Length: 173
Length: 173
Image (cartoon, rainbow over all chains, first blue to last red; front, side, top):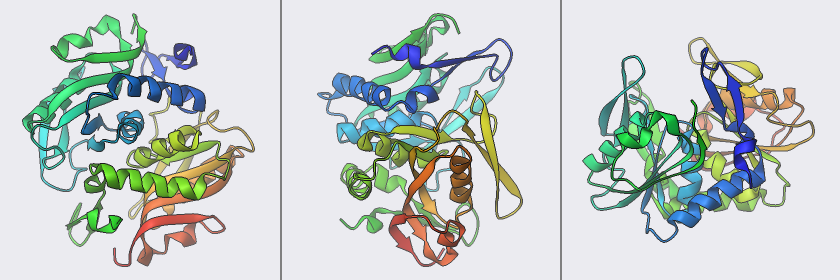
């Protein structure tokens, strides 16, 4: 299935010069949705994944389905102040300034095998921060999967020594 | 399975006097996660659901799994400014002031059968606004499902004439 053709590109969103890759046209297409989940599932089905971790909020969409499909638990990483129990926090770089993200400290047990999912790999800052949080809890990041990778931004450099897959690539951002 | 016992209650979060029902302890438990999805699935499997609609961001978690399980498309409703193509917008009441939410105008076709999911039914304002957006696009809201219902807040009054289910009830907020 040519899922790349189902992604909608919106020029100049959220600001001039950005080609926004809109996944909602894929999400609403039930055949494409199932195809994506099954592609990820095939890659990770024998990896004994204990937890799938995703970053708020688009990452929750395929992350939770993957958890269900793999028979794993689901762990959300959220913006500060959203998780009510004891958290670990990690800062990360944005284009201008910094932001931070939090995970519940009891979300992952030491030694658990973790799959990280986000919808988009751009510079890799978000997912690198997520990996730091998981490793802080002594989880083992077994793999990282993205729906879309903007290859020209070299995001894989931010997350070396990880098993990374993406299903759709764009060589211009 | 006694899933209510797996929900964590955090007193005084996000502010004094609120008993916060934390679903992350359920999400990370793979057996409870599967149990919840399968309970929803059993209720809707013969309802010919075309689209599952959920509100950002906790609603995305079970909403997307339900879409996958039911063989339906998934449609996110998001905070203003997040969706890149043409949107419909709906305001709704918060405890103090108002907020608004958006849906892509091409997300639902007239006559499509829609299941709405959110994690929590409190006053019902959020999901009532979601139903208005779906009906504005001439979708047919066939059912609404929640993981948790705070029954003392009478949220069902905000969404009359809908087929509503919840899996866990609390009679105090």
